[in-house]
Length: 193
Image 1 (cartoon, rainbow, N blue to C red):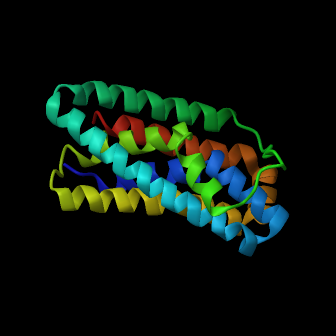
Image 2 (cartoon, helix red, strand yellow):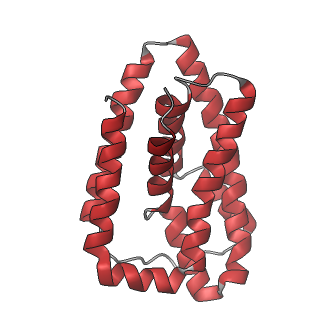
Image 3 (cartoon, rainbow, N blue to C red):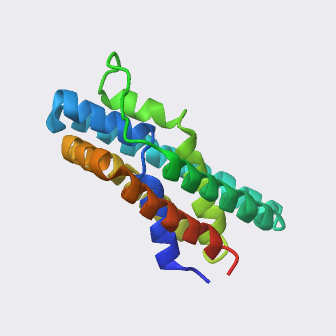
């Protein structure tokens, strides 16, 4: 049975926690302003959507060819989410990136193909939440769009609230990290109960 609340918690926590996309978006917005960093965020969305489509096809194929792979995918997905929870719990408020990178549309697209966080985000969401319940092409394409929109929205939010959000995290890092980690643990446990 599809758990919408668990699915959305997983998507938003994964998308809104620090990662390459979020940190670069925030950094560019802080250095260049939101307007000039917006094209980079459009590139993130375009690249994210491409990766989500590829991961949807791969997940569906694996799930269809090897149905018993679901339990392995559940265990690996839950383990990854617990690892994410640990990383979030232990993370600090230091958000520095290289200044020599450019905030172009193509750089936003290109970074998605080397960003392991979004591959795991896609495979976990597809194999644990979506494929056990939905199999139609339209539903899978719809979920790929939803995953891309939620995923890219995290970067856009980090860019928009760049300096404000960074200041808040620095001031309340432990509390924010604890809440995110607890939500991730809930998501990991919900696969089995």
